[in-house]
Length: 271
Image 1 (cartoon, helix red, strand yellow):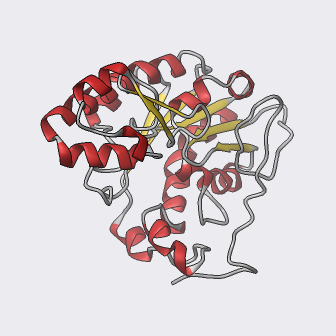
Image 2: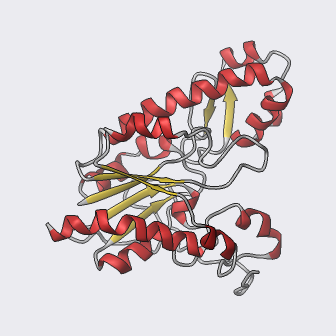
């Protein structure tokens, strides 16, 4: 069910652009006169996938597609990065993966400015609401939220509601800094292992509809049963990484994403 190359690691050619501190999927590209930029998290980065969907899209449209995917990134990582925003603003088309709402700072907690999946601290409000919780034991947002859901489901709902509201506002803010021809990609995944919900976490169809008007187009990809049946075949990982790989889009899903995006991106060069 897996391939192994060398020590088992896939070379992602991690790179940075300009003054940005985000470590992105490489190889690093010199922007062409016209190009498409793709921002997103672990799925866009293509963890365990040799040819992620941005590269597959590039092959289909025969135009440059720059992968700005970053593992564990949420909206904040890009919203607060002037270098990457500038790169996106100069692009012919920008594709924005709808990233989970758990990985961004909000009224209840703060996340790492670049690795948005890292929990940094609880706010005074959070500590007051969850006075019986020791937040020093948490390093990741997902772990923290899954524990709160079990310990105090009624109070936990306050946090989830805050994340949903913040996500809508933050996505509109991001979209307003992108060129007119932007595409929101809603790649629907499986259920979170801790029971927090479907990936991307906390993002409902209603929320996508609320932000849709801020983007030029919206593409929702629900992986087919055939693609899901392929599973991790063709992905590259060590045996110990198998659980992580099984929770991420496989090569067949990346193909379906590229197919779904191709008509909307191609039209920009055909115009």
